[in-house]
Amino acid sequence: MEPVLPENLTDADLIEALAHTHLADCYQCGKCTAGCPMAAAMDVMPNQLVRMLQLGQALEAMKSNAIWACVSCQTCSARCPKSVDCAGIMDGLRELSLQRGAASPAQRRVLAFQQAFLDNIRRNGRLDEIELIAEFKLRALRHEPSLRFLFKGSMVAPALQHRRKLHLRGEKVKDRDVVRRIFERCTDGKHA
Amino acid sequence: MRLGYYPGCALHGSSNDYEQSLRACLGKLEVEPEEIREWVCCGATAAHSLNHKLSIALPGRNLALAEQQGFEEMLAPCPLCSMQLLKASKLIKEDDGLRREISSIVEGEISGRVNVLNLIQVFQQVGLDRIKGAVKKPLTDLKPACYYGCLLVRPPEVVKFDDPEQPSSMEAIVNALGAMPVEWNFRTECCGAGMTMAKEETVLDLSHRILTDAQQHGANCLVTACPMCHVNLDMKQYDIERSYSVVIKLPVYYLSDLVGLALGISREALGIDRHFVT
Image 1 (cartoon, chains in turn green, red):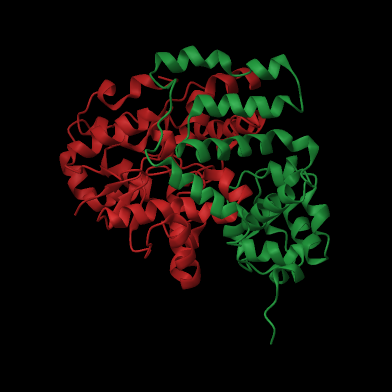
Image 2: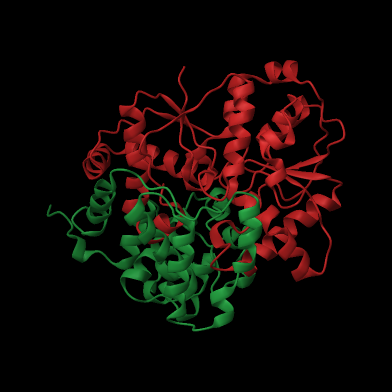
């Protein structure tokens, strides 16, 4: 039998592979949604996202606000009677929605934060908190220019400084080249 | 046995009071964790949300370093780091093709043999009887709400720790210190985790519910073993009070703070004076 080439995979197949789970196992009991701390803030419920994937509506699921409201608490996956990894499916949907440019414009701030976070790690190997805040705000400001947002949270800086919790320069690993190479190999598509 | 130490970014950043606390406390119990040299960030929520491969490779790099440096056990006091390390380890052990691929990506052989421990497990290894015997100042005035949050107990097949719905390991330690943990409902609910910057309203809402439930059940403090939970429940408590027009003033301790206090270590030596709610 011919091996299945990646091109032949549907988005739902890709998400199954990313999440190491079986979408068809879900029988829509709704327990994931019942225990989700963010369900009230979601436009599409977790069990509905799984159903959309079963029905081949992956792109619609990727466009939802819900996948960016998810806090990755893992409650859905832990309680699923069929061991469907719903939190893993959320991760898969976020990853593909970034690749497909399908992320909901209303949720750009969460995506901007996560992209800024990874950029920071790629450069330093470890998180530099001040740099992260600056990068996050610059990214997010492109979509929502607002002075209030720019300075939000800055009032806490003196309190952090007073508690010796503010580090003007973050730590870096010595061998940053290896970190860069790890990032390259994880994003070049050759190690899919 | 040598115990490796993976601090993760938070404990070397704004949660450095947690590191101060656990070093002081474990030192008193003659446990001296050795930092893994050249450790890198685990990738946290950003990696598992945006790049699955990276979310295995970054923890994988740390597992490889720990093996190269001769550790068989390592403490990861941040439950997110700990879970990411355990998840990478599990996936690598289950799939030899993946193991070889990740080893090549991170330029270091990974077998997955390093045992990753959370802080509660290190206290369990020391032994509750020994901790009980070393108590100098029993915490008889404290009624803590033991708060596990998400990732100490979830996903259960990854972390394989305690009961995911009704955990009791933290209560057992707090009991050994002479404190009286309260029964309450939000022990494994989420505080909003890494949304502190990107979606503050999520953190304020979820953390408000947790703090309120703890108080309604008679707690006079809350205890956690997670740097992010501590930020959301302690540093953000003032913002929660303002947003919901309530007064909470509930001190939030790291588990090592309570063990340390009972062992006779000062609040200053543990870094408790550096918390926001005191």
